[in-house]
Length: 304
Image (cartoon, rainbow, N blue to C red; front, side, top):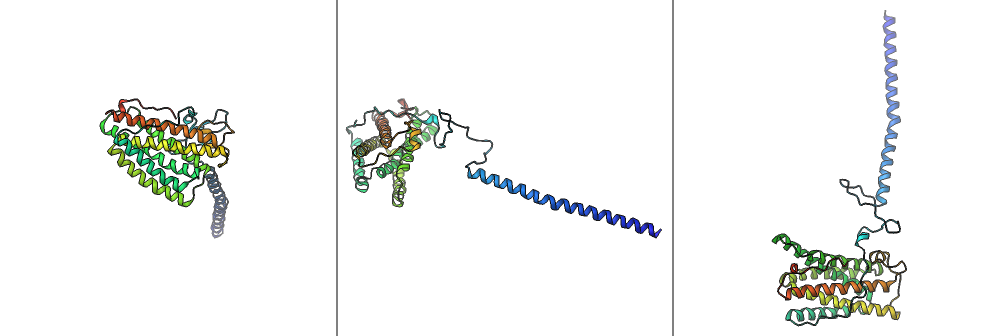
């Protein structure tokens, strides 16, 4: 009897040890596999992040966009339907003669500011253009923002002027993105941009609140000075003072320029844009001078 009991006890012990051994073998063999799987997933996510792939939020992803030739669209800041061909036939020499006190104040203010920019930049046309665009991109944003708030406040349409002014601001920003590809700003120029933007944004915000007609006239004259600057830039390219380098890829896609476009082509289309902004802002000021609101005249949208 004792012998049978001891036999059973030994059998159970052997059985349990076998199970424990199997469990240990299972856990020791599967743990590295799990770790390898986690490591491979982490590696895969790192590769995705390095390629610029960001996990979508609630399934929001950018659709695959291609050029007309079938190649992938490389830009996130603008799409093919945002591109256009600038109207280079526009009159770039037109000038609005100041008549009222507001006109004269705006004109002389711009001329006064021009003196300082010329003294600082002299014949550094690329740096001058870059600085000019950091300022030129502010008025459209301020005007569009204030008209947007007015529309919400008064439950009324803007006549398309919100879109027109924001289009202008975006177009000026694209000028800047193009110039940055051509000119690398130094640390003191970056500091100057930060200071000028902070001062100009707040000053123009107050200016627009006080007198929209004077503010738009000011921008019109600012654009006239931009036309002068870009015309000088073109002359410097033609005379060989500035090298006529190939156009940046962003400019070729944005303005639908030919593949062999040069800096001269880029400056030509930017100047045409500035002429359009000049006309839009002088037109907006004229509407206010007639005692009307912007919404009473159709906004010149769709140029860009």
